[in-house]
Image (cartoon, one colour):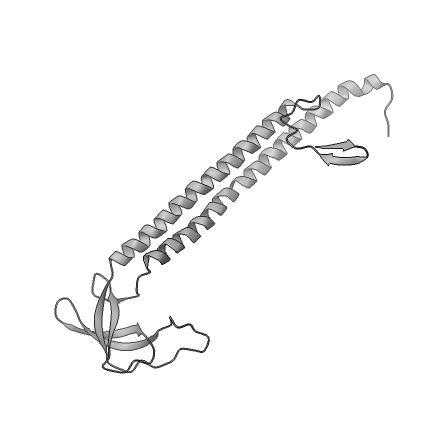
Length: 196
């Protein structure tokens, strides 16, 4: 709602809660509904974000618990195939040999640091079945991923409420206009003449 003061239009905040002769019951209902929706959006976003963050961290912790490191010997040289745009954390693929928990010797392709020569010992990760697996993320990385995904989920869950608020606002606005038309049909003829 705007109010004119000394020729300038000023925005009047919270006018639906203030007492004034133009305020209708639908204005108060709309104000409380929109405030409730805002509150529900914030609560739903916070809850969804926390649940998502916890689930992501738990999943990554479980995955970390299912993998274990093993020493392996490189069968071939780890070629230095890292491109110029890669960081120091990049790895290259090389054939390795390791001893399984049952005593058998196994071979496979694993990610190792580039430039290591054949015969060198390196660390690889195995899953519960003894198959090669990617290294698990650290607890700090798991926490970071949980926070990022939780925040994204919180924002999305909060934004789900916006269309509901828009629909309620439009319905109440149509109802308010219909009430004004009815009242104008009642009051208009009493003025004696119509403009336009």
